[in-house]
Every structure is written in C-alpha cells, then in structure tokens.
Length: 218
Image 1 (cartoon, rainbow, N blue to C red):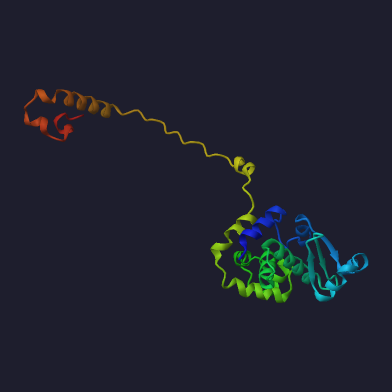
Image 2 (cartoon, one colour):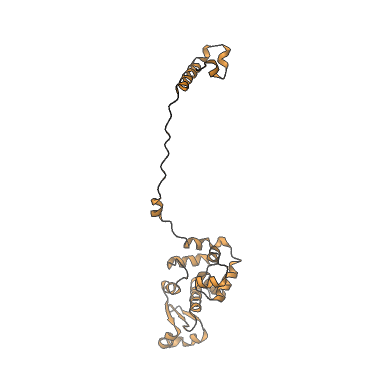
C-alpha cells in the first residue's frame, strides 16, 4: 500500500538502507522539526495543540512538525512518519497515515524478501517498536508481493559497470583446419570428375551411390 509514494520519498531523500533516517526525510520535505519543549518556550500559541496530541502534530502554515520529545525514540520515529503520511497523501484520515508510516518504516516487501520471521528481528532491523513490528509481520502474510517490486528495485545495488568490464573475456577458440589425407584428396578428385562427367555415361555402374566401389582407392 502506498508503494509509489513511499518509493518517491526514498528517492527524493536518498534513502538507501534501514533503518530509515526519519529526521532527514522531514527536513528534505521542507519541514522544521520542533519538540514540544521548545515549542512551549517559543510558540505559546501552540501550547493547546500540545495538550490535544500526546504524540505529534503539523503546522502547515509554518511548515513545522512538532513532536513530544518525552516519547520513546521509536515512538517518535513512527509519529514523524505518521505526520509525513498526512502531508504526502493529503489526507486527514488517521488510519491512512498510520498505514503510510508503517509502510515506509518497515516495508512488507522487504520483510518478505529478507525472510524476517519474528517481530524481534523486524524491530531491530527497522528500529521500530515490538508492537509495530508484530503488526508489520502479520501484515506481510497478506501482502501482494508483486506490489512491492518497486521498493525492492530501489534497494537493490546498482550494476557496477567497472567491475563488469574487469571480467576477463574468454578468448575465442581457433580451430586449425586439418589438411585432407592423400586418400581423401584422391577420393574428392574422383567424385568431382564423376559429378562433372556423369551425364556422358549410361553404364549402370555410374548409378551406384557408393562411389568408392566404382573407383576403389588403394
């Protein structure tokens, strides 16, 4: 789900490995990142919003994503991508933003491709909470693998033409033409003569297929 949008973010922000750099994505998309603590000091008009959301919110007027710094690091990562989901998808739906955050942090195509069979491995590799990892693992069971090819292609290493050109080319095998034996030369000469003069003869012997029987070579 949202593979096209996610791959576009990966490309734009030069994301090439996991765990993804959520802070770099926020900045690359033109947002300023502000903690609730700094917000309370410098932007009193937003204090009420901090109380309404215990995680994060976005001010599009100021292009500012504000987050609760008291949450765990992994929770903050998810919250930031949730806010980016609202922005990228142009939606106010919380479930859609959650789905985007889960997909960009731990793409099911990568989970399947790298054969992660436990929430613990997924949590460590993608730097997400165990709860989020468990949801991601369950979601991968029902995922259409063909939909994730674009994401897998993005993370495949590019072809290194330098290494390719360094591979030695196997030299062509030259086959030395063998000279025919004297017996073969004589047989070829007699065959050519017979082919050329065949119409001149009515003898049944010339109708034999075995030319060597008519012109014994010895």
